[in-house]
Image (tube, rainbow, N blue to C red; front, top):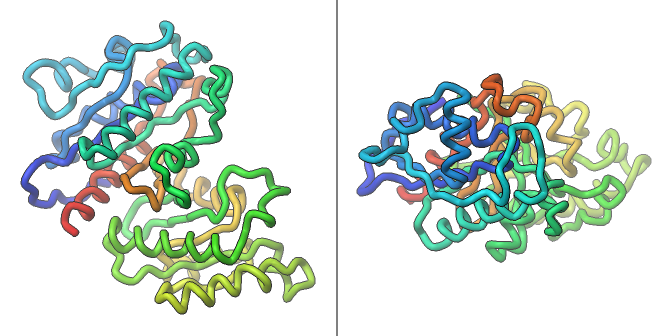
Length: 337
């Protein structure tokens, strides 16, 4: 799961936000970093969260946190952000909604200032932030707003030699709003971002992107919808003209087969529940979420806060380890560029 370290003049600096304090984020963070020296010898980590909470969750899951982050240990340091109110595993409290956003803001500000080479985000609970009186749709949209990025792309990916990657043309929208949100320009820009970031952050010299249709059977030549003819196909033609290897549109129900995917570096799906169920079925617990198009590197897990597992030690840190590994790898590619 880890990738070989590249020589550099200084350790890579990676920030990790521990997310919803009542969820599994704090304990998964300490579990993932227990092997930091072996997994990522060229990286140092800043963990953003309440110091007492981290120590308590580490003790609950049997991790010697002091040996990792205490005095004399420079591999991991804690950037203390105080909780709004004490947090109990599995029990949400809106009084900690702004605390969660403070963690994210500190990581974003640090990355924009050059303090961090990348950030990794543990899962948060959107309802807690909204209940705290802060309108919040999701990490992806918030990162775009805070970095003043007009167009970002959500991509989830598995791990391994030939990972399955699925990016989205639209993200957190009601299904009834998807068709209106798809334009030729937006799809071309999405493909441009995917192509650019796969080249520069993932080391793929000539990415091949397969694109789904929106409608069943990719519209059946207009009998089941015209978006493929009026929007998606013209967008692909423009993208091809710009040197982007994007192909389609393909029916989504048959595209996700090995005979197609073995030749693809990424699939672009038109909406959230068109592509992500397949990705999560294939890779859940080891997959990652990457926000493409940002001026900073950001990765995350492929799961939620798992309130029922928080504090039990039964949650699997595999996805967070993969997210850290990808952030480190992306930062190496960016540094080497």
